[in-house]
Image (tube, rainbow, N blue to C red):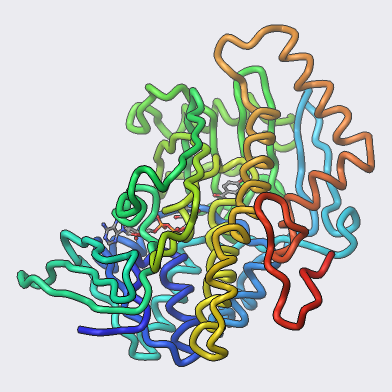
Length: 411
Ligand code: APR
Ligand code: PHB
């Protein structure tokens, strides 16, 4: 088998890249370890930045998103029993976020790929990368009981944190940066209207809590819990009781409870691998970086990586230029690190850290108070929350000039 771009992983990063490439006439094959049903059953994040919404529109997969996505112009911070609304739209000069589940994004992409008739090999086993630093890379795998090989020009490693792609880069060429947090998030999904119209990020002495949603009829709630907790040990009632304790009275009173559709615990981690390209292998999405979910950046970073990678591959095939390929890693990492910083900062601001001192406690309270009372501080949170521009000023590593020679545009 031969293709132009071999994509490993059919999560949002791999599927979105495949969709953009297919529409640009660039041949691609996706290899996915799990079944399609399994991929579509995963409950993940749900807040899309404007840049991701625009990219989904460009990819031709926004019909349902445009119909069903909830545009949010604000977000709430809760602390000291009081709810504070940040007007994202006003603070950013017009930007908003869209609430639409990652599961729905994935579903829309799977259907679009089916409609285009592009190949995805599900339940591909023993996926292995070969010759990534040569002009003729290959991916070997087993499917339907037979050993197969996919020859290609490039490999896109979109196989998440536990995938094989990152490991194909020689250890000496890869630097990794990591922070593991001493707590997790217990999430609950329920078919009841949300307790508040917009998201509520709550700091409380008992721990962080988040009220989110998937639609006007479906809510997603989270509680900070110790890492050793198990989701099975939490009854729905115990979850709701604890959630009410951590929310301002008005939000707690509006909470509509019901049987959980899903309940699970996710650990919190910050992780970055550099570089994001080695030879003809590109890493994109969770394969290259993980953020803690506070701030909702994981899915959005996968989208910005795909934006840069798609542009680079299109330049290669259409214009015969490899400038975008050379710039990919630095360009993606400049945005990744800023989202890492924001997610780490929001996590530190809102969670209760085991063993934290009374002084650190007061620092959190003072910072929150400052955030909601200073327009400059509110604006800094808002511009990060709605998503930094895809072509921001160079942060880490040099950015290549743009093709028209103008250099990267500012805001
Ligand atoms: N071979 C083939 N496929 C693999 C392999 C492998 N060895 N290992 C993992 N995969 C697949 C996984 O089964 C998964 O479907 O790669 C896919 C990676 O998808 P995600 O983990 O969803 O990662 P990504 O596409 O980068 O999406 C970004 O945003 O909200 C966050 O973390 C959340 O998943 C989300 C991410
Ligand atoms: C979610 O809805 O799952 C969600 C929303 C916001 C976050 C994290 C998760 O910061």
